[in-house]
Amino acid sequence: MRRVAALLAATLLLAGCAEGPTAEPPADPSAPSSPPSAGPRPTPSDPGPAYSEWELGVHVLPRTPDGYGEIRPTPKPLRHRLFPTTDLLPPPVDGEFHADVGPVTEAIRERMGETWSPACPVGLADLAYVTVTFRGFDGAAHTGELVLAAAEADDVVSVFRALFAAGYPIEEMRLPTTADLEAEPTGDGNDTAALVCRAARGQTSWSAHAYGLAIDVNPFLNPYHKGDVVLPERASAYLDRARTQPGIIHAGDLVVREFARIGWSWGGSWSSLKDYQHFSATGR
Image 1 (tube, rainbow, N blue to C red):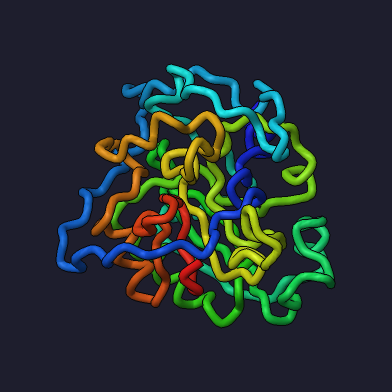
Image 2: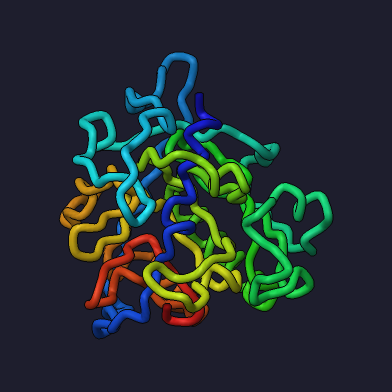
């Protein structure tokens, strides 16, 4: 059930991606990017790729004392993760890039549920609801959605425009909701998302995500790692950054360069921990 799979897609957002890390020297901006990763859409004579045989979002992990799931080895079907994208929003009819930036309406606010409240450090008037076209691992164009700081919205759109043009694949891009907050841990989510109002992991201060100033990109392929902690909890195989399969982010890649162009930093360059999925406007 693909929608159940989505419930754990916000694991890293909910766990807290940043702890005030020490940054390593930035990557050489002239370094070559990875080649475009997504292939063409399947045709009737081409059945398309062999997708991963793993039922997402149903294999519940025991909880640890810190409230997260127990860290487990990456299951074989997820070591080369490949799933099609389920469309929650209508995909672009022409298959081209489209984007829209608008206010967080009452309907959007209702969908967000407890991921935002009046106690959060940013008001709804300072947030924007953004839709962008992204390329799925199925090769098709899909419509994704983010809630983020309104002041950063146009720049973030320009990043995703460049990623779409280059064929960089994203599995899922949807709003985290109360269901994500309440879901049992399965450690296999992969949602690219921005705003969730909560503290940074291990701290009492607000995360950059709480301000809409951070985005996690393909978190299962680009996990958080500090000590024995890996999030998502089944993503340990992707700590091997020598992997070059589509969606994995490396220093100097187009994804890193594009976020750097708008003044956002990458958690994969930190030395006190590694947060390979995490991009933020605050450096945290």
